[in-house]
Amino acid sequence: MPFCYNSMGGSISKGVRGSVASTAALILAAGQGTRMKSERLKVLHEVCGRPMVEYVIETAQKATGQKPFLVIGYQAESVKEALGDKALYVTQTVQKGTGHAVMQAVPYLTGKYDEVVVLYGDCPLLSPKSLSGLIEHKRRTGASCAVLTFRPDDPHGYGRVVRAEGDRIARIVEHRDAGPTELAIDEVNSGIYCFDAGALFDALPLLRDDNTRGEFYITDVLSILNQAGRACVACEAENAEECMGINDRRALAEVSAVVRRRILDDLMLSGVTVDDPASTFIDAGVEIAPDTRIMPHTFLKGKTSIGRCCVVGPQTLIDESIIGDAVTISFSVIEKSRVEDRASLGPFSHLRPGSVIGEDAQIGNYAEIKNSSIGRGSKIHHHTYVGDSSLGERVNFSAGAITVNYDGQRKHRTDIGDGAFIGCNVNLVAPVKVGRDAFVAAGSTVTDEVPSGALAIARERQTNKEGWVAKKRSQSDEAGKKTPQ
Ligand code: UD1
Ligand code: CA
Image (tube, rainbow, N blue to C red; front, side, top):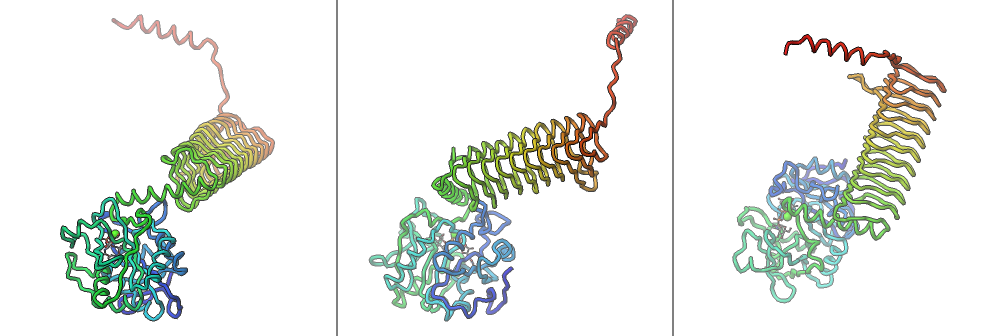
């Protein structure tokens, strides 16, 4: 967990002071994000399994070559918990606007950086290439500030870019402060800027909060720079999609769809077959080796990795799990588990956390496994439950057999040796052991250890009552005659 201290209304992680570098990245993420209508801070909402701000941090890190500063305020502790040491934290105790957020970082940037890149934590589609392009553009033009601009299909909500001559920007007017002429402008502010550090620090104290929101806007720095005779230039994005900001949940879905498609494209280009990208949901960071096929309606989440030549799906959810090579999995759910090479799962199996399925094992047809290891080549099918157990190699766990692992208060373990055969509808009441090559007869309720090679039968003996049905029927007929109609 990063260490922070307070100074001049802000705080910053230890170890930053003293480091010298030319371009700092400052990501603003202190606002609640009221338009999300959420208890949760906006920038922690996930896009393909990761907090949206993490994408911005990664992009800033790649483009500037160093750890970015993150301005946090609302739910600051949750941000630190989610992001750890991926960023250096600056605190904005009260949220008085994007300009005010930048002011909080000034004490930590002054004298250390030539340029300051400012970005917003709600803009996760930006690529490192576009950000580097913006920094280059500022350097090439010699301007005090370069702003990444774009022309979205619907400019509603974005600040409008009022151009002076050529690529010069006169000012940026927020949507809510704009008049009809400004609202008609289709070029908008992405919220991604590269400033001359000195020019920015000179302008910040001149910001005023005399707008509809009563906030200090970073966008007003541009008109202040212009008044001081310093140039601000527009750098129009090659790909407008990259500039999309997330303010509400519709935008969250739109941006997620773009990231999802990028993830799928990368996987397909690396040799993974995706039968139907439209119904396949794969989180950022999931690894899949070439020649694996992902069938429709499949969800791969968290830190999951899948080996080569597997067939996964249809209709499968795998979360935080490691899957080996040549594994087949259909219509199943796997959580925090490991499946080794050539094992097969499904249809309709559930691996709950802590399960390890050995090579060539077969788990299928309504089997549920929890916190158990299943040895190589073992078979578990047909409505079974294995919990808190160790099964050796080549164990046959027949239809309807279950481990009785819970006594109402505590969980107990079951150990089954290599080659054991557990018959149909067996209850193994844990704690219990079944030795190597032992047999447990169908319908048995096993409470004591079964020695290796032994047959355990723990059930009532069958008795047949000859002629019982006919006798019962004639008794019923007699009774019927005596009953008044
Ligand atoms: C902002 C820009 C707008 C631009 C748009 C692009 C301003 C005034 N407006 O508007 O010109 O077109 O982004 O997406 O900058 N934040 C803080 N502290 C605060 C307020 C905000 O850290 O006191 C952070 C938020 O957490 C967020 C970012 O700044 O990540 C942007 O704030 P938001 O309210 O989303 O600004 P927009 O209205 O989208
Ligand atoms: Ca925004």
